[in-house]
Image 1 (cartoon, rainbow, N blue to C red):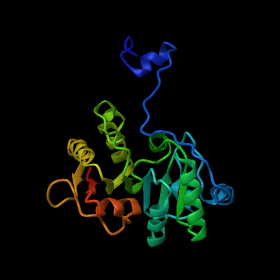
Image 2: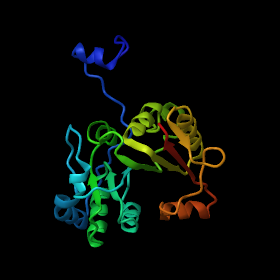
Image 3: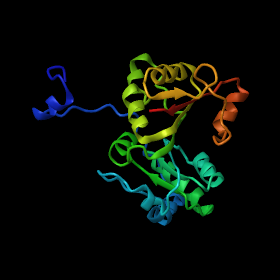
Image 4: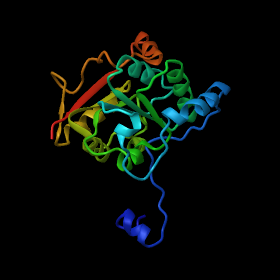
Length: 239
């Protein structure tokens, strides 16, 4: 796009420019149980992508605080959180279909009614489907840190993304991030501290102790045994 000053200018000229995504699509192979779970539970817990705002009250069949998680993996922690907080609505977005299937299977076994899932690019969902000021919390746990410097631009936590998240949070809502890669934690803190309208909930610095509502994963437990750290950052929307 070097000869064009912007994406819009390139599109106006009829030139297609590939966009950098914040994830790597991993299709994987569905197990029979995951396939069966999608067939069984998607009609009640699945949400299809649409290019228009979603009525969250109608989606869940009730009005309650909405917690949205981006990249829930296989979904075990998300299901645990939803089961532990029946007074809240949980909305998960994941691009890995086996993860969606596994999450649906777990949620179905527990007969959860306060969980909805999507299989789509989270940035598009936020921009086009999630109403402004509608979320009580947005969770981003252990996103790909893109270790190599030349790949840092692929990290999902960038100023533009964080500002998009802020617009979707209600005043007083929280953006909760967690990572086991310290340089990424530092990057997250730098981005968040540079945006007006956010305030860190940390008593000192930018990191907070793991809140009780965030379950410890097996991966995290293994890392702790090896001496690996985990950094939680929670920023509140103040304006």
